[in-house]
Length: 240
Image 1 (cartoon, rainbow, N blue to C red):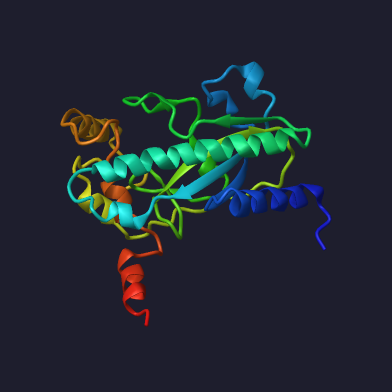
Image 2: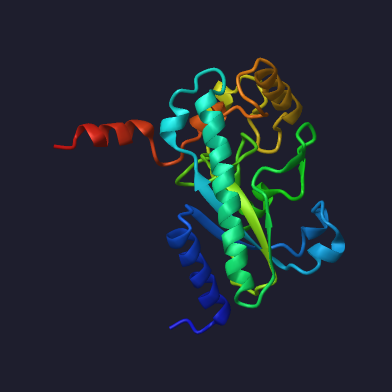
């Protein structure tokens, strides 16, 4: 029996997040080497050695209607997921505080500078350190099961927890996202993503009135992980 209290507390938190809060992804990262990059005061970040990364699935049924541009259906789903995650992060933070530890929820989509991809912290980087996925060619975090179809939120804490292990790059020879990117921003090699070209296309979508903020969803739809829309449709057809 594992008697490590850090491991026990980790499992306790994971069960609460997945079963009680209804989240789909949970991981813990040691952030001591990256917290100086956060757009928060050092007096605040210095209190937190760990970050809990939480994820919620983007539904395949919502992405189904996306072809060459984002849809209003996806836009509203995107906002609802962010709201769901923010509420879950607040509930988790209150739950942690009640047990005598500090917890600071950081909003799911509180970007301070879209063009230069600046925010209070990188949920993507923390999710990567927390073992939720690898940085894909599409510049998104890619999970083996969900692909890039999820949104993230982060809770910083001083609760000493067992941490997860980052996953190796797993895109292999898959280039589905690259083939459909309307901005041509996705390149062959990981790390060569053209974020300025991506931003220009997001701005175009917004300026055309398709959606109310900088989102796309085309490469997210292409990066579906091990769950395929066709398989789910077939499952429904096979029901007696």
